[in-house]
Image (cartoon, rainbow, N blue to C red; front, side):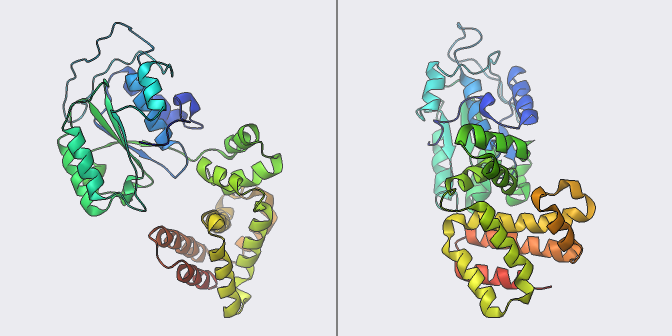
Length: 357
């Protein structure tokens, strides 16, 4: 289990008031289901919220200090956990300290190795869950990026969901339900996480990252509601001027149809050389075409607000169907890149498709 040291409590989660309110209600009413599915784009706090739920479920620093270490828990398929949760999260009791230091034996994180969660990871998890929790009132298993499970791993997890272990809650995180087996989706209670408002991300970058207001504004816009994407882009500030890079990307997209084939291939090659900025560059390109569609119906909701006039001019030149097709092409390229296909070839195919009028 790794990566929880910097996470602490529900108050550390930005812009997710509705899911946090629901989780607190479930905890307060002692109605945590045996399986939760957190849905939303990358970087909106799903894993952080899962860890905060684990801490709140096991915190010893609030409520009845004479609470017995173990409490009998009723189990059924719809609502299997009964835990005492009058409290918030103290952050300093034995349980909270162990969770914060990645040292709690009953808080288990499963993440992709490479691009996939493999069947041996789920089998090892199943073996672990045949034993009772060591010390937690409620054992919490977090399967991060559950859409990365291969079919065999998904089927192995399904068996566990059909016969959930006592005193255990599974929290899966994913982007879309369509990326998971329908039988897994149907056995989880869904909690949806919204993209983080741009102004929240901008304020975070200025206050916590020391970004200038100009950099924070442009990065928050290009991050498309994802804090992790915003932080990734901030890490490249200095190496990459994102205002200049966005201008280069969008100017290239505007002139693609007029470029010669060698020029298009050179553009693809340029993209492939800067792997550190590639994911964010593709998001910038996608946001451009998205804005061209949105401008036709709800101009006030475009993301790149500082480019309003340019977006309005280009939006008039292209049909909605063509724009949506280009967004699909970018999303397909992103998926292929995640699957470790040939990067150069993937980008060349993408650029040739985007060049079609």
